[in-house]
Image (cartoon, rainbow, N blue to C red; front, top):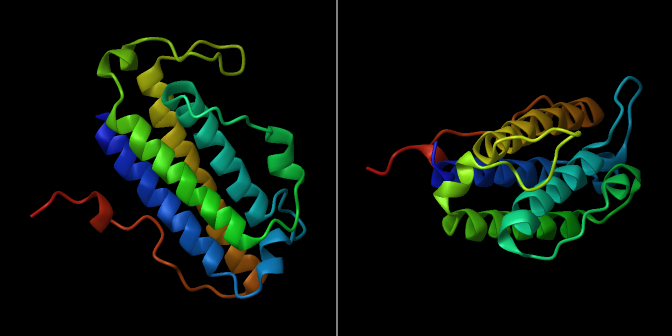
Length: 165
């Protein structure tokens, strides 16, 4: 898998995350935590933004983004417009960074140990894409549970990753 492919997947999921947040009819519902669910949709979105901006933007794009992982899970009431703006910023950082990524780095250890482990950069970048998709599904179900609306917003559509005709 190339870094261009990873960029397309990550950007597709970030667009779906934005669409999920915009589908909450009441912005406050993004922060609801129903019984049996540990995190709100808003907190998961903050977590995904911080994760990508730090692990891709800071580590390889020299963005200078400083992550506050605790705040990703403890913040409440962050305006939806601010979160959407930060999703767009994360997408831009991922796109710019992966477009200029040196493929030789894929075989090298990721610059930061993860949970006390060294991980090959290429594998960790794939992990970031699957981590994003996993949590995107959680946001989708959170929105459906909280709003009572079972309608899909078209999460993870195929056209954005289809080969050009």
